Amino acid sequence: MIELDLDAILGVVDETGAEALTSDQIEALEKKIVECNEAENNGDQIVPDAIYDRMVEIVKQVDPNSGVLSAIWENGGGDLTDTDAVFRANPMYSIQTIKSYDCEEILAFVDRLPDGIKFNAHISTKLNGHGIRLIYQNGEYIKARSRARSSAGRDLTEQLRVVLERDGLTHISALEGVELCEIRGEWVLPFANMATARTYNDDIKSPFTGVSSMGRNSATKDEWGLLNFVAYEYLTTEPSFFTTKSEEYDYIESLGFEVPMSWTVPDLEKNTLLEEIPGIVSDCEHDVTPDENGENGYAYYTDGIVFAIDDCQLFRQLGDDGGHYKYGNMALKVGYWKQDLYTGYVQTIYWKKGKTKLSPVAIISDNEGDAVFIDDDVHFYVTSEKEIANMEDLGVSTASGNRVRRVPLYEPANLVVLGAYAGMPIHFRYGGEAGVVPCFEDGTPLVEGKIRNAFIGEGDE
Image (cartoon, rainbow, N blue to C red; front, side, top):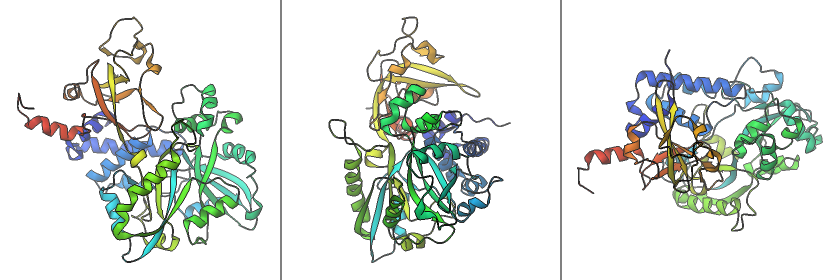
């Protein structure tokens, strides 16, 4: 049986590129993706989305024809019923992620746009929660399912019923003549409810993990009631009757649902779009982030903004990549949402036990010597985090409000390459729930750093 040491594989790719992976490692990675898909369908999450997306990117790079890739967003499963007819007609797509203003994906997005026309863009916050589809029959709420990668998803009918009853949305009179429809959106934990959520589970580290905790089947109705549903799409078995995405948002709001914060940017053109996007992102940042007093920020945790062609006909004309992404929108994870560079001080090295070996993980904090060990001694390495008495007090805060306590180093050699010793500074990039990536002081990734070190002779600067 082929075992997967995920840290080791990510380390290999980070240092030498995906082409250095062996066939066994690629096969193990594909099996891990399938395992994640199956777990997702049962309402579990083996790895955070950032790591899952990274695994898919690697497989796509080394084997674009992999059967795993074509199966990721297949929709089906034995639990589909007649009330899933909208789901059958409208599969749930992912959104292409844009991580820089000059990456291949954003250049391709612009290149696909038609020449010589002006268009409006619909911009909305990308909420970081759990994707949900609500099913209504003649205006009556009948069930809710989670977003799934390869099936109809987990049954969340009772959890969402608590939320919808609270908001007066279990029956919608405006939908009484609609035989079947779906309202799709995000199940989220507002920042304002984080403190209360932690009284039920003090292990909650972020609004995203709060949804996982508060939304589980074994949670109480009071816990379910701490969550909100924010809608972004209305669908029936018939073709959409909306002319713009802005119009669709207005309609969803008229039904009584909350929609993501959004903006409409008019009169954009293909040949100037790349110059316009940074300014658009900056304007959105201003509306989302708290002021100097830490107030007036957006109510929900976001991990980007969705840039969509507002005109629905043009959106459809742009097509898709064959089942994974629509070409009419993209998720911008730049600016405030970019994978930012941070610095912390190594407190100790935790040797984490993997499938076949021990891997080093730097335990970090804001200052040297923040860690307190249970025996009051100094530990330059530990084999269990339980040796650290104040583990929860350690860490480096990120712009998005999370706290990073661990930086994976993947391989023992990286202790030397990065100078990751107790008391020394360590640099890393952070891009969300699990996007902790070690790097050099100038942000250089390990693969470039390794090449640089190989060509600099002894005594050179």
